[in-house]
Length: 184
Image (cartoon, rainbow, N blue to C red; front, side, top):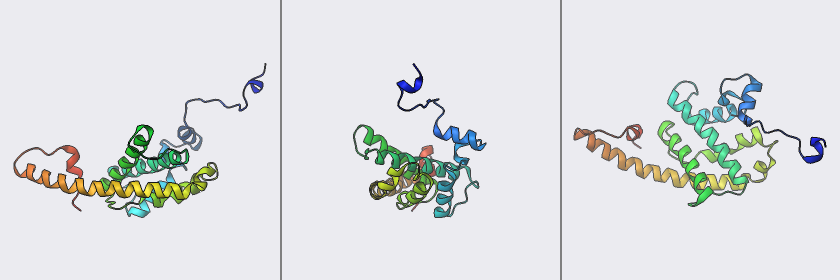
């Protein structure tokens, strides 16, 4: 019997991944250089006023944020909302990680990722119409989670900056992760 009679959709999962396939098809050496990510990265650069390609730490932060915005938006369209349990907690942690990168390396003190949703929709909305249909919910959920996470980072950074200064003054070592916190 032919393959077509067994399978309603004749596709082969190579395990290559959409992003890697695009990278190969476009002759790029990084997923982030493809037309899937470059519009989002350029929008982040414009929004933050930081040139992409000028500093490795800010470049990594922009790539993390671009990737995480996609992940969060698609998860929400699939019905998974951030929460404190199971898959919802994973989504919340992904969003918090993106906020931390924006806060630490791009100087973002307020919610901003939700405002980049139109860029994602422009890039992928034709192929994924559920992004268009769910844009209000996605933006609302992202904004609320971002605002909560930004407020948490403001409290944490004030606390750790103070502690780090005291430790440094006392001749003690400051944890490496705390060295990147910047005063408000």
